[in-house]
Amino acid sequence: MSFYNKSFKFAATLLFSSSLLTTAVIAAEPAVTSTPSAPAAQNQSSPSKIDENTVLATVNDKNITYHDVQNMRKMLPDQYKSLPAPVLTTIILQQLIVQNAVLQVAEKQNLQNSPEVKQQIEFMQKDILFSTFQKSELEKNLKQNPIDDKAIQTFYDQHFANAAPVKEAHICHILVKTQPEAVKIINQLHAGKNFANLAKQYSTDKESGSENGGDLGWVKQNDPLAPEFINAAFALKANTITTAPVKTQFGWHVIKVLGYRNAPVPPLDKVKDEIRKNLYQQRMKTIIENVIKQSKITKNDEAIHSLTQMPATQKK
Image (cartoon, rainbow, N blue to C red; front, top):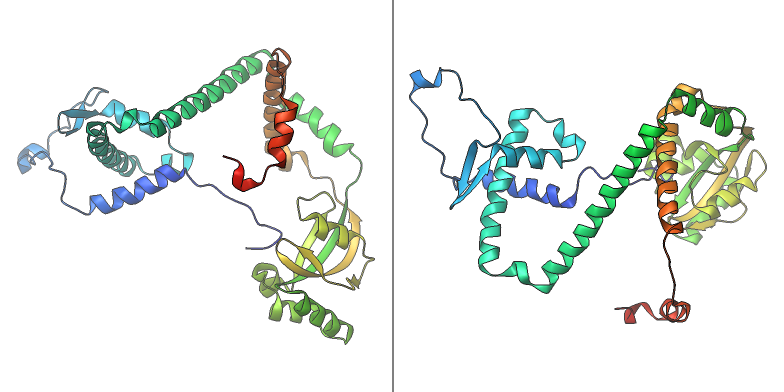
């Protein structure tokens, strides 16, 4: 993945991801006894009416209903909800069967009363309450003052159309693991070697190196890249190369700047979703700040200072 495009995409919670793996394994085993199939002639009749109390499976004496399946469906990440309904229902039901079987054994072992479980339940309860409060307050706020096209246009005018121009540079780089490697490349460039060819040969950033000859495209001065990289790049004149390697958390960079310009103003339709999200975040931030203002908060500065000075191994 490109140095410039590195980001974390969380597709689902770890819990549900591992649950799907568990389901896939168990589903391959004939461990669950199904209700015997009806004769072929009966199978052609209309299916029974399903309501929320319909029992879909039983684990020992515990029934799993359609209501249980629907509740779990609501808590899934959106990408799982896009699965075909029969597939998703089968996956959820199998997971509930596994969950109930395991929980029954865990409860017989009295694990629900262990300090660790109680501590985690308390933490999750607080987290759920916090999230519920945020959602409730935001909904009330939006009823009184919706985020409409006018609000989006106002934000766009202030932060895009009429904002001060942002400088950006057309940057190429070669990323290697060690300083001596980077120095060697700089020497080769001074000797007339082609930057793109060296990037394809040596750069560990394969996306920009192998595919684009080290070209990162236009990079804004306020882009969230390593500050050492940004500072070194924007200190260069156009069509020049760093005289010394630049170290970041990713390794050692040889940087070339091809030119500078002011970033073009994006059209409203390209940033509308981004603006809407930003406005939601601003509303939520204001709500939390108001709660903090209404709270009486004191800090033990001496203890906090001592804690921050304590070696990490002693912080328990």
